[in-house]
Image (cartoon, rainbow over all chains, first blue to last red; front, side, top):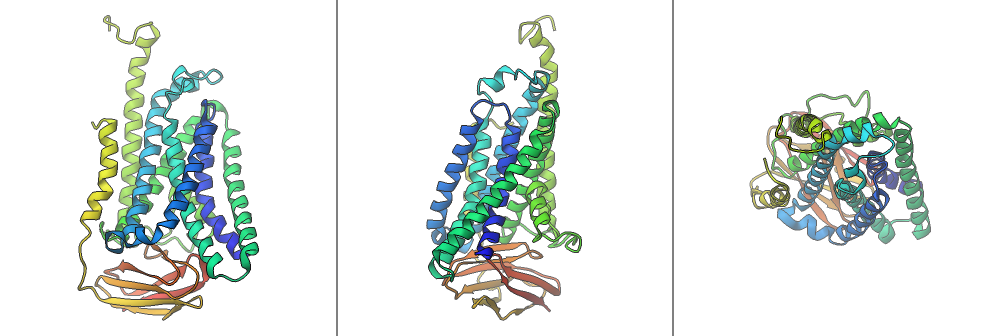
Length: 285
Length: 113
């Protein structure tokens, strides 16, 4: 029962942390509960589907289907998180200055909550399909019986959800005017970490060169397999022995999403004074 | 600057492009690792240095496993009774950890010489 709980916990943890951050990042947005829970539900549903077709996926692309599938999911999630962050950099100022009465775009649902919802669905799908495959294997051939498996799975799930809830409550204790700056950074680092994981899968599928299979080794300080290592792996993409290509993808993601955020944020600051005068395009300027 | 629909199309086209470009690697040396009774057989896997190697992971257990290596950045689910291919290398001489992420007692090493 305990080994089952530990493994389920490890898989649930990553998805739960992402959900916790997304919930904090979307604080105050109308309908976020529905979007996020919809994302979780779609992810669970998708995870079961992936588990059912696991053998077919694995056999695709000359045996590299699992790698390509994982990489596609990870990069899609990076795209969604990046999209939301860039959008927020345009409207975040509005939200911060009207901390108590949120900006009209944000309230009216113009905000791309679908992007966050999709990112949540992808995270749940990826980790969830591993849980389903693992539990299915145990159910078929493991010892201990279905009761021990169910109890272990449940304990793991509850602990994972507790970790996600903890990071959420930690984040929402941050004052509102700082919250979106903090969550923007967290989402940016999260996206970079996911991109680095995606690069590892493409490297495994032999589609990308390693560019040095181990640039450094900090496993004596913090192992990937420890709980803290696992949490940092999810939050900022910590890897004790990163390959060169992972660093390239990590840095490129930071630069591209971060750069777009600055670009869009800066152009919004130039437009903002015109808007305040009652007209978006002022001929006097 | 790409517009959103174009970006979406690109997002879906990319994995497809990769799928079509997976090269055939028939000449690489093959090393078989068996997962059996929660052990790797052999537990010390000899692998030649400096060349790409095809690891054939055969899971002969009744439970699924996830073949994983932190130092090699490899993780692949191998269902019960099935086999999977994992390419590694070209590797420098040394010892690299391998384990089953679904059963942490299953541990071993890849020894590159």
